[in-house]
Image (cartoon, rainbow, N blue to C red; front, side):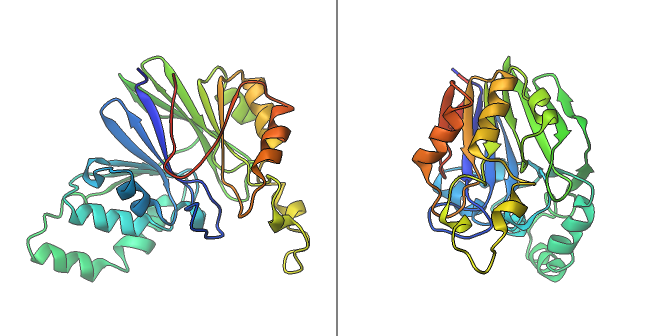
Length: 275
């Protein structure tokens, strides 16, 4: 039985839909739970999945775009109110100021009030922040996490999780990227951004007439994701970060032209294992 599992809390984009929340994933690694990104809707999806929020004591942010961080304050405050007593956050450069600006400064009086009512400050006033870069992020006897910088419009990292002989890699937001291929080499599972999947958002859009041309510099097509999976030699490829109305059958066809392994369409509340 696999000891490395990913629960998708959000497989959408910055454009809100009822079906897909913003980007977010929960890694269940043995008895440990790690939240990877925290876009809008993450907290509610975790509750829908039956996750005890107080068990999550680690958050890793791939980058600081809104659709990967909008639920940060809600999750922190809500899980603390439920009894969470520890937290460490890993993120790219700028995560410390982000943490202060979206959580500690605007909610300082709120936090102080709740402490005055008897809420223990642990898990809120002592949150650890580590700003990581390329290379090893965490190296423990049963878990190794490694990062590689990928190609996006802001500093963004892909992450490789290794546990008990199993390997899962998440691309972050990126177009095709050699560094990602190397990071994903031999992985059981590669989760890959396919924001450039065929979608009505790219057609007859007078508000954003050049949207496709702009976004393709920072996000992947299905063929890009398939190529990365093939070149890295992974077994399973999970596609995520879909725009509204993405054409799923066409997405699979374009990806299949590059990759003949297992292709999984990411959906909110989907669970994927490494076995």
